[in-house]
Image (cartoon, rainbow, N blue to C red; front, side, top):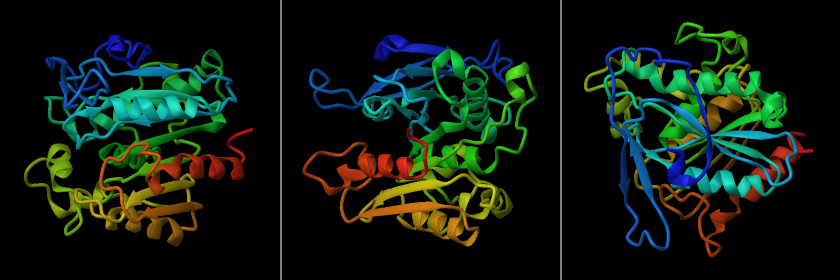
Length: 296
């Protein structure tokens, strides 16, 4: 998979991933760009061996981001994630793009499969921080859309154990130091659930109790990490109420949080274009991280 983006990779698991006995999805790459010669817009599915794509910082500060692609739990929109990781690498933040397994591809404990990979990634990075030149206390997560849901689950359920430990790295804390959620899927409950993501993660007929158990706004406690949230008010896919519900829950629990709602931008805006006000979000995030002493 590193050939797609020319990046070094770090494998997450020393052998077969949890719940992978007899499971062998085939890697698929879908190109959605109307002009691939100018830019790529690729979606991955069939990830059998989850890994991290390493995006080295130009002048490392020790800060790092686990970057989680979106894609509705149906695929991984890797080019958006990689371009954002590259942008922050210019400011001394080392990036690690998470290529995680998708829940509907035959894995046992399907709903927790993406979380298993996200938690393992955080633990590996903490265990091997010096090797990558990062400060484990300044390791955050950034997720888009359904990747924002996974980033939220990682932030809010890091005290759970969705897989059995495989080595010493699994003694590390999986909680990120901070979380950035961009146009995130948050709730799995009606009326504001993104039902396509819900179906991919939880199946056709989950109970209300199961839906609630995977709804971020109901999982926030004072132990949650500080969060930065951004979305567009005209998002036609994931209702803006997802972002607002998360911000409300964070405020109720007195967790530090910053919220930016842009008037226009739709869904999946990534870095945006220079003509769009929402293209300011990377700078706003850098300011927030500096204010929180995550950048030095």
